[in-house]
Image (cartoon, rainbow, N blue to C red; front, side, top):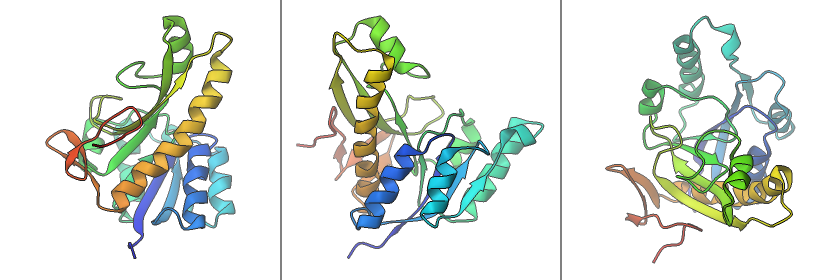
Length: 215
């Protein structure tokens, strides 16, 4: 039996990716112990999802700190108090500084709504449509000081339809996020996934994507 992996999840909004993690954990499909859900926004819906699941729901509001460094120090203290083996950014809408990222090197992952390295940053669906790409999707990656530039763990792609707008495309991409983020967490919990010398390795071999398939 695989021991439960201690995890802290960071959110800023609705928490739908958090909900996907919670549901798989509750079904016994994901061997994690979610020790806290921390939000950068006091009114985030994801906090209610955490409370409904009986999880500690914590707010660390950057607006309450006079400097970003003080906010990140407080956030780090809240995380470290739970001693997680993995920190998951699940719709956390702030760019974290290099010192923070390095502190959690190899145990900090993020889900991003594009097929990285395409469309780093915000408004990915609008930009994908404007660029006229045939395929769009989602990526889970290790977080490094290079924003949205860390090694990709797993990707999922969706075909861009002729009648798509940003909202319809976002719905299909989000469905894939809900699938691949728990998968990456599962691999980490199983001891199969790691970051070594700047590469994401699954079972000792470089992660392959799209779909995160391995030879």
